[in-house]
Image (cartoon, rainbow, N blue to C red; front, side, top):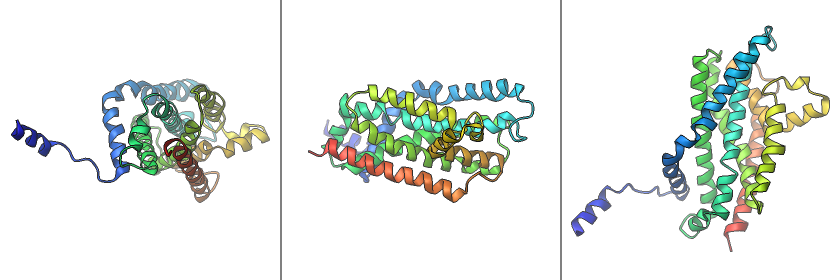
Length: 268
């Protein structure tokens, strides 16, 4: 019996020495068993939306948008909005559940990982979800011939920054609410309006002045503009540095707020 136990100890995979990577490993192990449940929402549904809007609606927009075929024009917006929805989806109910229902964060905080490690590990998992979803989306859109520039290869980096820019504030928000009803309100009054009016389906310039500036204030519009410039091989409406700095500011402030909210909940 002792020989068998010793042999099992030798073949058991070693856990990462970095605590944040150990937290990431926990979420990856769980995701390995549940990834099939999210295939439709994170991959097939955006593809069906692309086919419906890009090809179906695009058939009625003969002149395209700015001389660009509507399918080619809408694809980068759908990629960015998909990344946003995956990031926020994985930063709401899973985070709330880890505090309120399964108490996973409380168990992790009782082990060596600190508050920053717990937050960083879960954020890394959210970025993993965003990147894998967008990579699959890019592959499908390439098969449709909707990527017109090799600069499309930088899209994963853009959506990773977008994912962090929205996941950080959402982690902070989720850790601060007492009921999951507030999460539904976030989608109703935040995610849906942002998706509709941040340049995904039509140019922001067609909006009235006040709504246009609200669209410019959202992190999604900046990611959409960068993704559209990359996939079409054109110059973005704003400077690349300005877009990146704006998204980085959202990410930095969001992570700091999330760390503060997590610390308030986990440190007694």
